[in-house]
Image (cartoon, rainbow, N blue to C red; front, side, top):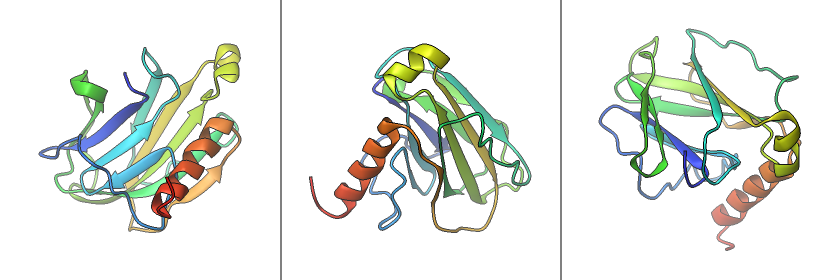
Length: 162
């Protein structure tokens, strides 16, 4: 992992390029466009614990185990996805999506994004994916200052304030 981000990429889609996001729907640490998503992690480089779970229905959020949790809709054109490290790093092929091509929900759990907390408990990232019709992004839990920074930065960018 490098440059504080990883990508969820649909087969045949490019992980890189400008993310325009979904206007009016910022959730800071994750941005989506058809066939790809950019997920922010705490460290700028190095190894992080990152778990992905693909399910056929909502597996439920781990509200006690993570500090920040967001959800957003994601469209998969092929139903085959991978997790890619920034800058052409390692590609991790994920299981085929259970409903094939279509709309899914991404629930991104983050623990230890703040540097002082990461030293004590270790950072960890957990992404859940399941089929679900599109709906607005949701912040389920927000406790870290890093998450608030990313959320406020995304809101400012979408409002045209740099």
